[in-house]
Image: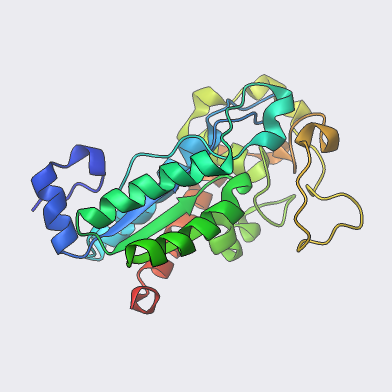
Amino acid sequence: MSTEIEWMKLTAEELRGRATDNALVIVPVASLEQHGPHLATGVDIVLGSNVALETARRLAAQGQAVVVTPCVWTGLAEHHMAFGGTVTLDYTAFAGVLRGIVRSAARHGFKRVMLLNGHGGNAEAVGVAATEFSVEFGIRVAGGTYWHVVPEVIGPLLERQSGLMHACEAETSLMMHLSPSSVRTERLAEAYGPGSTRVEGQPPGLLMRRSFQALSPSGVFGDARLATAAKGEKLLAAIADKLAETLANTKLWA
């Protein structure tokens, strides 16, 4: 049996076999958008894809059947549009793409799907979609943003932040590890911004997005100036380890 985990590198016959084996389908979901003066626009695509793949590799090493689709590379990024360099969808189009992917997997016999989100602007929509698709297709569909699912392993590895933000110490470190050519190190001195995307008096539970340009002229939330590739390597391993442990929980899929 093939040990390959990427959907696009498997044959149709091999994928039918994975469905028979009750494989978990992981769908990385991302965005193409501005990430400050120092990072290329594909950050969420690179990080979301690699978190999904590293998580799947750990599950496969445990003997679990798993397959990872190509990344859904665009999502809901209206709050980044003022900076340029961003592609955004409306919710109907975004949910339609996700629905088509999950519906296809269900038609091929897959019973478990994880919509693994790597962009903050998609978080609520992915959660709603997962619930809708579970009912619509009669399979188990989970949705979650990776730094929301496993925050406990991220904060302890950072020096100036309590968690992952945007174009920050965490994301920049991960990109230094995974795609160093996407990092403009000569601009790191400018790569910092507010510690929150909420205005004063706005509690975490009050959802009200506004243009990031109005909140952070640099386009950064957090502080990337202490980012290192070594930190990024540790972050990726810790995130993938904990996500694999979480998704291996049979009670989730019962």
